[in-house]
Image 1 (cartoon, helix red, strand yellow):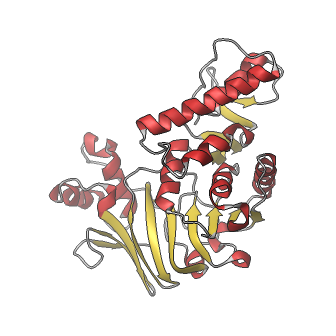
Image 2 (tube, rainbow, N blue to C red):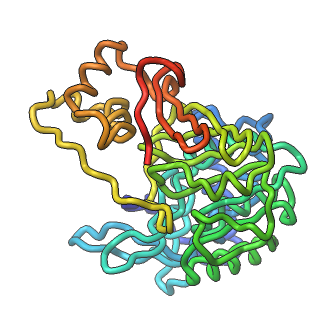
Length: 336
């Protein structure tokens, strides 16, 4: 959940001061992404998008943990200037922002900007590419894509009508009108296919076959799977292969037709250091239901603690599996 945003030294009083605070906050985020993440140097094709598409347009309110427990709602129309200033500066923190709760559960969020930058970089878009985003969220990601490619080439879809209506309004405020569809994102959006790039912004535990059927030959799909980001190159609807990017990725679970429950691995008896290790947790998630956690730990040690980018996924016809180092090598695990 979103931490408490930093408190500005003094809350703005005039519209000019509010605009100045927004500009300084956005520039601070850009500097952080450039300095700490080495993602958005001025030569990056995404720099202009992050500099030009205001995040606060897409998060008119969000939730943070309240000091006394529960959640506190920060919003851009708050008559309390101090709280409104917290909302504005918090919108440019490099953290995910919880934007929609239902019965105490997180339903939708604005992803962490540095993670979004890594995903967009990994998507490797080229001029003229048609892009499908699965999981519209606030619409900010689609806005960045519109700035880079043009709104006519961008489609974003979400299962929840409230989410898509809000995303459409946020995009319009920023000057963009891409296709925003309401439907099961796991089934794609056939009306605008074929796609050259597909970006999935909710966690999946398998490769949605319907999305592959809507891809052009050579398309690239980037999707969160097993706490990693899979970059899958598509040959056709029944053949695809790719490796994971280096970065960890934690997203709200996908809701849709091809979503199946994920069994929680039993961790009893594992060393405490292993249970806390990011890369080992990735291996546990990737092999959940097919590899005993103690066997996973033995493999992980034997292979010298392999990082995410040594793992990949292959689809050949009806067979879908994850692997270490080589799709035809000795370490392979079936996926749902």
